Length: 214
Image 1: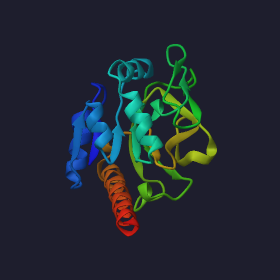
Image 2 (image 1 turned 30 degrees about the horizontal axis):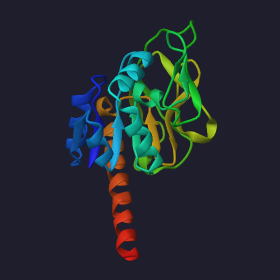
Image 3 (image 1 turned 180 degrees about the vertical axis):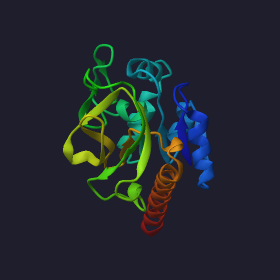
C-alpha cells in the first residue's frame, strides 16, 4: 500500500488521482497508524515551509515519517514535500526540516521573478528507477520560490532558473521532486508509475526474502 500523507497541505486529490491513473491506487490518510502500515509514503506540499512542518508536527506525523525512512520504506516528497526532507529552510526565518537529506532550502535571488512558475527541462545526472523512460530534456511543471541547495551526490536531475538547482534528489529509499508530477502530463505520470513499480519491486523482494528465510 502506498499512503499519501494527508496533513491538509498540497495537491492531495490530484496526487491521488495520478496514482489511480497509472493503476496504483494510493490511500490518502493522516492517521499515523495507517502511515506505519503502508509500504511507501508520498509527502506532497504547497505553500510555506514553516507552515507545512508545523502542521506535520501538530498532527504528530513526523515520527511515522522518520520510522518509515529508518525501516527502508520508500518516501517520495513532492514540491514543498521535497523541501521538507532537507535539514532546514530559510523561508520566512529559519525552520528545521525532517533532516532525511543533506542540504538546505534557499530563496531564488532577488533579480529573478518568483515564484518560478512553468515548464522547465530536466538534465539528468544519475540513473535511477524513478527516471526510467524519462528522456534528457523532458519538461516538467514547477511552481516554487525556494530551491533545495542539495549535496551534489544526491542530485538525480537538475533544472535551471537563473542558475542550476536540484529538480530530483534521492538517497537510498528517500526521493524528492521539486516539480509537480501530477501536473506534468505524460512525463510526470511516467515518474508516478515508476515510483509505484519501484515500491512493488521492493515489496516483492522483501516477500521472497522472508519466504526463503522461513
